[in-house]
Length: 108
Image (cartoon, rainbow, N blue to C red; front, side, top):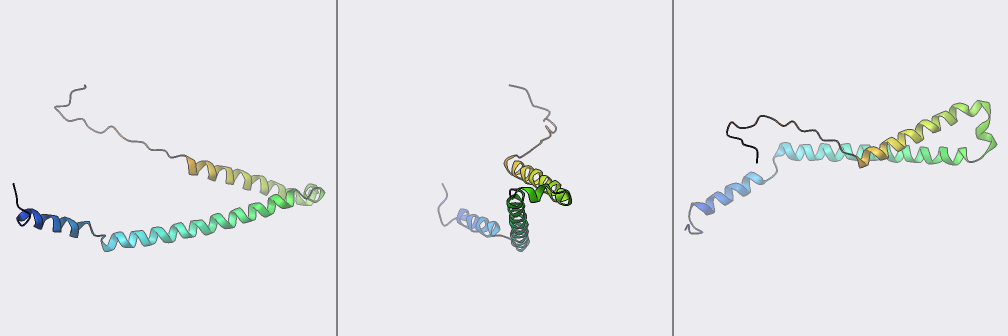
């Protein structure tokens, strides 16, 4: 058995020092936070614009005029984009390669 004053105590302090975040990782975390904040701003703007267009389309006759057909088509695209974005949030695709098997590998 090793005592707590032996080399084992020294190794735990080196593990603690190595587990501290590095400057590069802190930089990565900061960039990630900035990107997530920027994406949130884009999502909020999109959702606000989409909500305004949904209100407009429900006004009735105004939306069916020929000169507003482009706006109606744009709203349909917005609906599709929003549905795709919401679907993307719930789905994750992961693919893994089996890699090489060790020489001594035997199936169980």
